[in-house]
Image 1 (cartoon, rainbow, N blue to C red):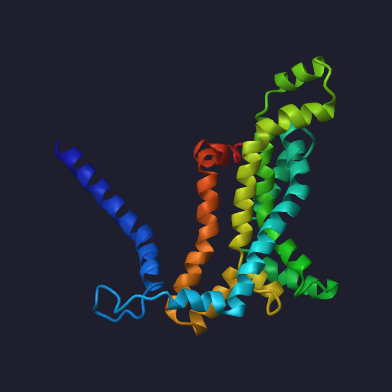
Image 2: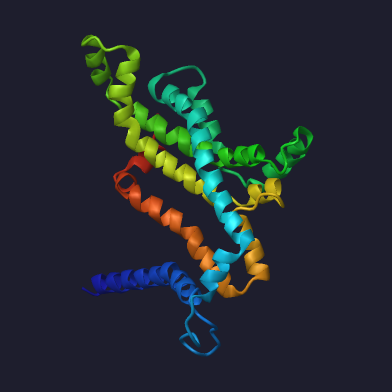
Length: 270
């Protein structure tokens, strides 16, 4: 009985700390975004206002950053899909020499700090004229999405029963028809999860975007540097909330597939 009570107390304490560390910053942002000011030791703000939201929306530099983020992220997903989905199909449906080494190599691209890689890339980008260009930024973003857009769809393609494809072929369907009517629909949930994760990875990318795009192209994550240093805390809180909205919406839409195991299955390729 005493052991069970101790376990329950520790579990309750752990859950309480988890709530504080996860919901605490979100609650602080939500209050700060609507506060006129908040002085110590008051538990509540001195007043409430929507002025900070109006200032963020009216600020041309901040609105441009929002537009850039909402442009680069979908563009990155499209480019990643075009490049990675054929490779994912090959990894998932075929066994060839060097397959496992290539898979590990793709996964290893996200296993190390990227800042050193970005600095090295910058010198090459200067030589190729890719600094402060849309193409240069997209290349940087795609590097962060390759692992999601390859591993997860590859596992989804690999999970499609070959017996269904063979049955369709026996019924007279062409290879293209089998792919679009059998293989692709069954693999689509995994592909959608990969696209969501790729969108979020691109949307949140800051270091490489700042290094390659500054000062011509600033996205929402890179603009946060300037907000924290040069703007009131209330405007930074508003911008942080705006930055989190796409992530929350997309994760909510993909919740069923992520919780159903599609994300975990994407890293169980054999």
